[in-house]
Image (tube, each protein chain N blue to C red):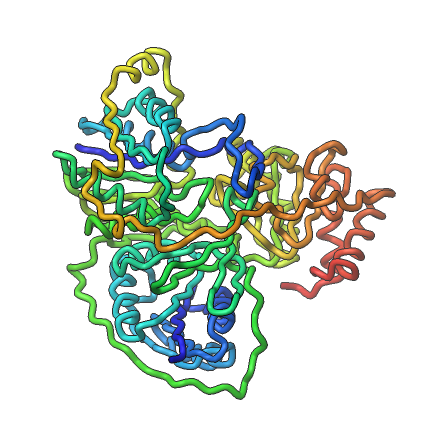
Length: 327
Length: 259
């Protein structure tokens, strides 16, 4: 019997996240000739069906209901539970995002499933599927597999390569209603305060511009933000910069903080302490800008500029503006 | 109020990882309380200072983890539970660990009003045990919290959501996972350290708990640990700042093709 993979799509402010397409690609790696079902929650879910289908879905399950537009653990738990009961998957894949991280362990505990979180690579060895994930924030990696039972994984954004898009694909579209009684929801979101400077999520950004102690003040992040704007990048920081109060802890990259794997990481005024390097050394290309030629960051950088970031960064921004179309 | 803090002892974040016979070597390694769990300990102490109550800290691990529990007791926790896994030959994963904690809680006389766990451990980083435990206990959880205040049975929480802050209302009993920015953990004082030595610490072995082998049997299994390929130092650009910037853009565009 052919195997079934269930992908839970993830949206942020109504937009399908790239990691959802990566999850479908992962699903196709797991079962090339099996059935991939994508479940999508929220208003206007239907408008995404073509995208999901062209990227590899065989079935799309829509739970078109505005009560799933914002995330509440209990509501999502009930919806995921119902979807799983209906699909009866052999594998479940979703993004290692705010939603995926929060609800997946509860679902796994409820069904007594194993869960391998934050996978960065998936390979098949005969019938066995092997999942690679970082440990110690990427100072080491572990390959894991499942004992018999449902295989549930969350995947880290930006790591699973997309399979080719096929606009001629078609999929079966189904609708599902999940009744939610509001008095059963044990947590209520009363307000959301937007703090993020840009809409670009650090863990999903293709380019990250990051500042350390060398940025010297909260205002010192301004030239970095301007560079990030030109590159359509997210701004990050080292623990040093966060501890010094130059920026919010939400920006921290490292073993405490976020681990990022962008295509391009530009480290400005960051010395390269081991706990920071753990959070960014898997970036594809690393640029270091630092006054100190002996800073350890240069040992892992692909390109280094020894110089004052307050001179280098604005110049870089100015030159890139000439080259790149306005974001 | 009755508080439970689940914590893990981890490598200091400044430690390098060395493999020995395919396993991570613990030789000469400095251990600390997982930094995220330290926020949990600190927050429990602050809430206790405000509302009164008792704080239990719990860990699962080898004998050395007593040190982490003693540090938490020295900070201000009241009693500790250590589930020892020294001689254990079975593999434990997040499923097993949450089942073990659940079984320990069934053994306790007290019910906990608030359970605090670090949002993740800096070693495994899987961020599973907290929410798994909440599900087993059938209580709500809020993850990655950066603020909490309690009023009777109600809790007002601020949660970090990728840089934005969600304000959440919920009720006790509750499990929260703690995020950076929640607080600044205190250092234990000398009198605190002295007192900690005499605070009660209960040890369990897995055999003491009503757990079948099937219940704690891991759902996943580890095949191989490996280190990332060593990054070699790249090119330090030369020339005037203007020349270096021009050369960098050229290389990012043509050589690395990342623009």
